Length: 595
Image (cartoon, rainbow, N blue to C red; front, side, top):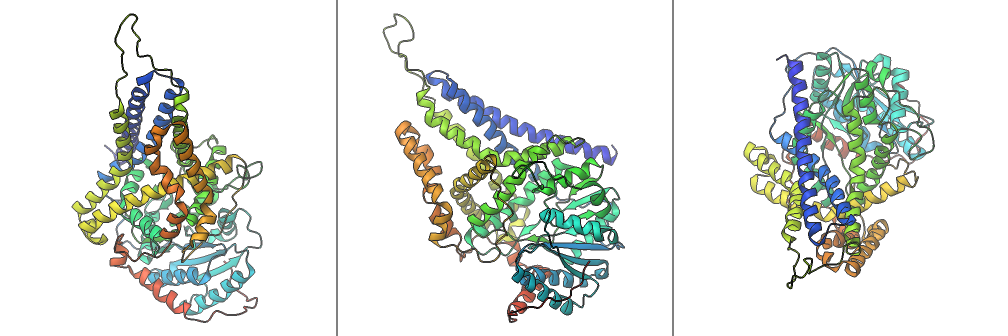
């Protein structure tokens, strides 16, 4: 079988397997709950709850399918890309910034430039810092540290800085502006975020892969989260490092050549991007109109529509980013993603898109409305006693003995175990896979991986109801027409006081108290089932504050902590040196280079 046909067959088979897993889990949950609910007579609320379980479980099953597929595959380097092949293409590395700390961001650029200097190809790589900063004080510091970056890296003519007067289109508009004005000078562009970091050899290898496949329009890497210090950040960092590679392999199998773009840590063919990825301004006001917020998935779909390959290579190493250090910062970032994903409903039926890209848009929408289905199930269960028909203990005429409904409690327990299994089993299987393959050594060994995995499962179970509340509020805000804007990402120490946590989550406490109170009043038998959801909500300020503090535990060890890579060590050294330098009290309007 030719390689192209084999690849298509694998992609189709992967999608069918994932769909079968998802639908089987959903159908099983649907019929099991339907049987449980019909013990006292089938009513409309039983059917409603069964449908809600069907939809919710299919979504959980779809996520579990990624892990199943990933566990049965291994990362593979493209056969036509020799690991030591020379490169000849000039590439620009784009670093969009928006009110970021320039010391942290520019020191990453210095570290990447130093890492590139360890290869023979540094002169083929330029950096362009694309500032959309609105704060004049931060902009002044950007100019100061840019000049220091130029001086220390001897980078005149290789590292450029420009600041837009008007940040139209936000990050997507920032990149579009560069490509329109300067893109013709570079066949390839690596797109980063302000917190991105990449090894020099990784950047070189990405160019190799682009050169080896002329039809490749975009190549996405899997960024590894680094530098987390707080309990929340370290738990998320550990989960991403241990589990994400396996889930990513499953995703890569299903995506095929219509893969994802996550907006950063990816390389694009500038000509393809310029010709295909002009984004429309949607009619009407935000949140559903205006500039496309989650532009990355739309750009990937437009590249695929134009016939370009969009590929996710899960074997690439040396790609890093940072993550939120507390639940509140995570929720703020998630609010923006929620609005962007729901906005994709306006693009879903755009002409010419590949079927898989339309499905990806649906997945993104479902990721945020799924909590509404679970919330609907809880509310329907509280209301169910009012819809249930009265029990008839003498259904057979003239029969003198009562007939009691069968006890179907075991079915409810089985359903709960199955749903939790879809959430927990994939992570446990991945932990076992890490032990068997030796990957666990980088996480502190087999014992620590198991303990850390169990701790992360407990931790994620506690914060899940809080995250569900934040997501539910975000969806309702968008549906009610509230624009969340584009808040600045908080970097560095994310420690929160109890008062700050209360200010951010007091409404979650109210929701939890009202939920448990209504359940106790209308359906007291459901109280034990609701406690795992209600208690974390009621204690959410304490959970948020405690998990935002710096972790002193040996749990959640990361391979990059055991053996840091050269670019991470270089960044730490440069950042420490720059932070020891006195910050200028005032920075004049300095002349800077422009790309």
